[in-house]
Length: 119
Image (tube, rainbow, N blue to C red):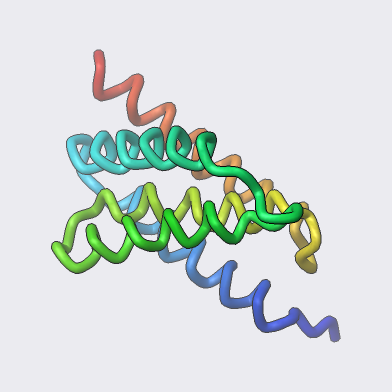
């Protein structure tokens, strides 16, 4: 039996929760999540890595996530997805490739829902 390290298990659990928020949201809420995801991607693009660590990017996303979460705003999911994406992109996490596949599927879902919302 393979034992998944704690950080990977916690990220996977959070990622599944985030995806559930995306999938179960209305078209309007999915658009809010997509907009937040784009804002988060824009923000992290302006922040440098710290010696190869995405920690500054992750912390910035978590700050926004907490703000949206405190307001019970579904847009929090876009910020959390980006925070997880940044951690996985460091490529030093057990099972990061599988997590990346799941993240890619979530991002694809956001893009599909956005196309549907616009039409």
